[in-house]
Length: 52
Image (cartoon, rainbow, N blue to C red; front, top):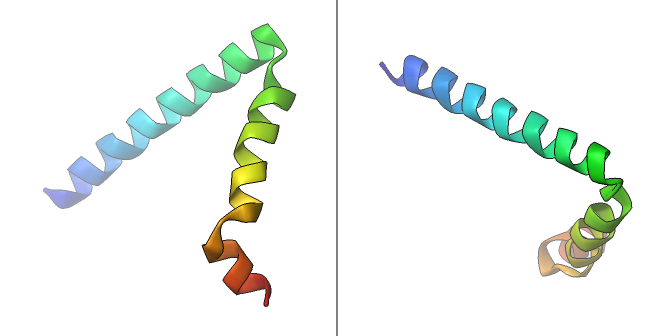
């Protein structure tokens, strides 16, 4: 049962990711997203602790 649910969740995630990738590709917005995603990650305490 849990395996079926897990598989369905993974299918859903892949669908969302592929749709997002298509949107970004068609709008040439990849750099905008990456800068928005990577800047907060490098400043997060979790990553800072891992670096030290």
